Length: 320
Image 1 (cartoon, rainbow, N blue to C red):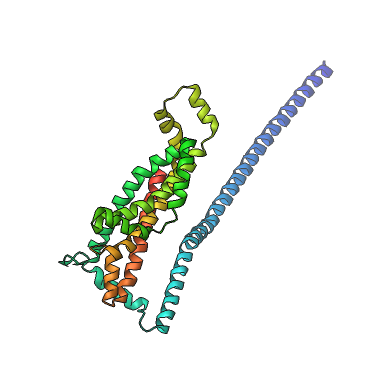
Image 2 (image 1 turned 120 degrees about the horizontal axis):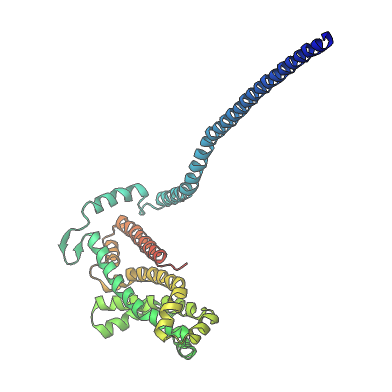
């Protein structure tokens, strides 16, 4: 009986000791879980801190990159203009009759303070002269586009027309624009239509040539698909040729507007009337060299704006 009771008591003691060990193990496991959780939180906090530091450290580098990109775009033109002014100043010091940049600037301020005055039919402000030249350019260039672009499509589309017009274009295209002015005066009996005629005949060639080249570059597979679908000539032009030829055509248009604005100055010098070319010649007769230099800058700026406007139009209608 005593052995049995001792064994039961020892058994209870053993069970209690096991429960104690188990409870201690569970407590240690819980403690380890808490420690692991704290370590994970600490690591996560370190990662976040490192990311924040990286972000804050990247902000100055991004600002430096933005500043560098701005300077990379702005500084070269500024240096170019400063170089032009320096060369101009140097030449003006060597030639006393040539006004320098500062004198020309003051003259430009005075000139553009009242650009739309009218003191007579041949004495008008520079603003009216620019508008008159732009009007002639618009008429001559518009007529050239109406004739030259469709003619370029026809020449590029049909080989017979290409062979027929090739010698005519090769013969007439190199002719100086001013050589056409007497023909215009003889036919139209007036200076203004003669100037528009000179612009027309000078601006038409780039549009014809570039448009016809674009049409000839259309892949033959496109034309084979058009034959299979039995498309009409109008649909071939509008759905296949025009989207493909548009970049070529706009290149010709840009070249033509540059030629038109270049020619109008020379044409107006000979025909007279109101216009930037006549204004330059009149200022030369008055020995007002500052206004001639101002006119050179005006012609360049207006030509740049015209080309920029056509470039933006080409981007709007681009099929790429």
